[in-house]
Length: 114
Image (cartoon, rainbow, N blue to C red; front, top):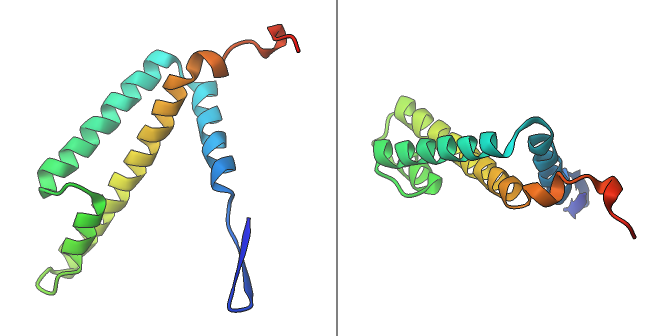
């Protein structure tokens, strides 16, 4: 996909294509049970970040990292945790979509008549 800003064309991946590609990879490599286990692990990771940093979202960590009295080392840790948290939320959403539609998307399409 492309956008134009100040006369400069910027290209970026189509988010729908990227999402469906990632879900397809999950479905090709993972059983429904394994997907459920991944969902649990991702939820545990998110719960750990919430508890460890006493925060409700990755944005809260980024806001804390930007405060004047936070050291560069802690700011780096907070922004890294925020990025990991966002990635975990995205991966969880992929896993949830894959589980929800597992039977439909993994069925033998050669048996479908049109």
